Amino acid sequence: MIVTINGAAHEVADGITVAQAVRTLTAATTGVAVAVNDEVVTRSSWETTVLGDSDRVEVLTAVQGG
Amino acid sequence: MDDLIIAGEKFSSRLIMGTGGAPSLEVLDQALAASGTELTTVAMRRLDPAARGSVLDVLRERDIKVLPNTAGCFTAGEAVLTARLAREALGTNWVKLEVIADERTLLPDPIETFDAAERLVAEGFVVLPYIGDDPALARRLEQAGCAAVMPLGAPIGSGLGIRNPHNIELIVEAASVPVILDAGIGTASDAAQAMELGCDAVLLATAVTRAQRPDLMAAAMKAAVVAGRLARQAGRIPRRRYAEASSPMTP
Image (cartoon, rainbow over all chains, first blue to last red; front, side, top):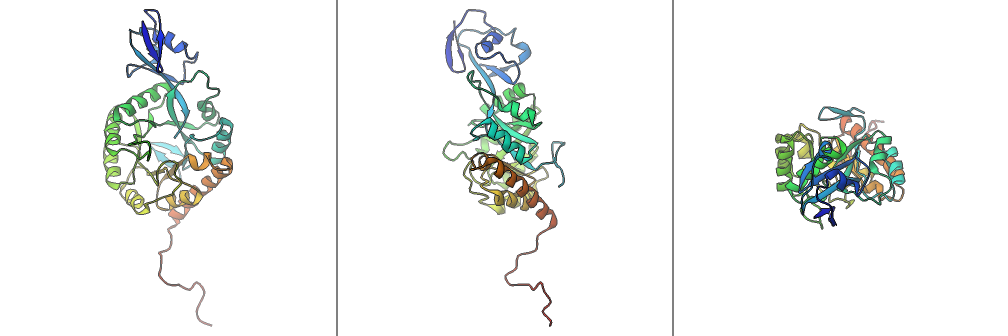
């Protein structure tokens, strides 16, 4: 199936979790937040939240700004 | 100088810094140190695996409280999601609410900002909204439960100073939450003026981070905010059309 992670399409195995999707970008688990289809997935749910086909995953962190 | 209190939290510095525009984290770090700030904004963006170093590390090592903003949002919905993500990533329920109307002016959209403020207050956020220099909107946002109001002096990054000091004074007179002059500061006298007008704090970034010498300008801003606050508390003399002798006129 295809999921979009930070705007880029990825072919991934069925059953991939949010935690696995995050690990494609970073090993960090602090200072990072995830939304799937515009809903926040709290860190404690990353391992148990399974992605579906066409899901849009956004992995955000703090950068210089403001 | 007396403490600044926002949502029950005390700050001994009345200079709030942004982190945008600094050429490197090293330059930013030096500027933040020179500014004496205790509260500093960051933006939320997609994680870049190639990025080295983090603004969060700089703030943590300086023991500066992080204030996430919703910069880049054009709608209330985007801003609410960004605030939720910032809370999740940074462990703070404080948010500088910023919903802009267009990219050319970066002026805040009052309708979307108010909508987002109501929703975020209902979700328990400490909301500091960036707004135009509009006394009516400032009052409505305070009534909606915002912890402060942050009127602009001039458009973001413009360095034009405070274009409408009268409106800033009107906002200050009516507000019982802190008024933080946000955006438009170009140099130290602008920051001092904001404080003389009665603002409780000043938020600036570009004026320092894009100055020829950011650390020196940060020190200037720190001094200006203190000077302006003291002048406000001292109570300035009335303006007169003609001279008033300060020496005895008698021989």
